[in-house]
Length: 384
Image (cartoon, rainbow, N blue to C red; front, side, top):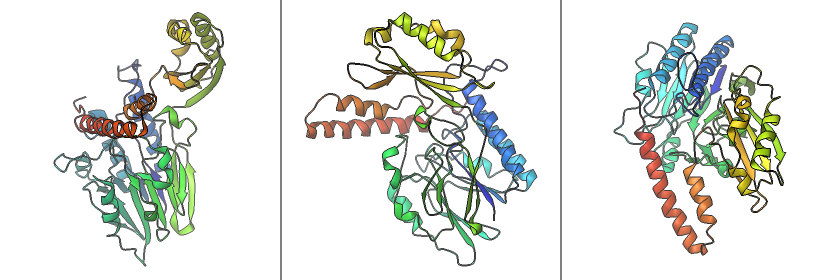
């Protein structure tokens, strides 16, 4: 068995106010569709026996029309190439109640060979000499273990576990997204020939034969150092090989010393710094750190100073480091939007409350924020 492991495609993710000139679609969203489609072409060219998608195919439970059509066109091409798709629901595209219809039901009406797990329960799929043990994103963390305990390792087949969540060994790298669950390290059992993980966006091995493939696209500036792409896996040979896939580049433009500079001088320095950036014909995402910026100077920076140079970029995030606090803050929003839970955490911890009072406020506030985030994710607009 030789298969490709991908995940976290987030079809439908739309950010920034940049529109495509030809059809007026949000440019970020359009590039994600185009790169995903190009990635499928590259995967088909590798002629794998199976394509495994480890969750978050869609960015929301109620996908946009173009997200759906992109997925269905993918099934057409996989079917023509004779490549089955094994896919599980992730925390973004898993319904948060048992009464909400899953977007994966539509995929199963296609004539292509699709094996989808999205019913809050373990599913076993046998393809050739391999059994894929599928555990989608669950309603509660404890449910992962309940479903995992139903697995019976086959002695006559290769065994591949496919699941979606954050390995406990990476607990310090939480994404703070809706329905993010932690996977107990004991589930990364060496009895499996391979464990295909989704949710964490950096390509990384976390245990024997256990890998995050990483997302195809950069979905947050916190991922700027991550390896992106997919994995080509041959369990019988214990072989795991990186697969490059198309994506929007994310560039760290370094830092600018801004001690004593006025807002106008900083704006000109930014213009001169980004002017020679080689975009390679793409629309890259760029991050620039401004060191030693005085608060009044940061407020006086006029973006029009470097508007022409910035027009070659999909986004420019400015990170301010001030003399007074030495704490980074950003003027531009990240790709995945504002992390309200993290913002609230930073705000509360900066109030200097007594420890017991601080923990109480954090616990209650975080609970309210996550409830609102889940409700918003569940009720996303699918009419586009």
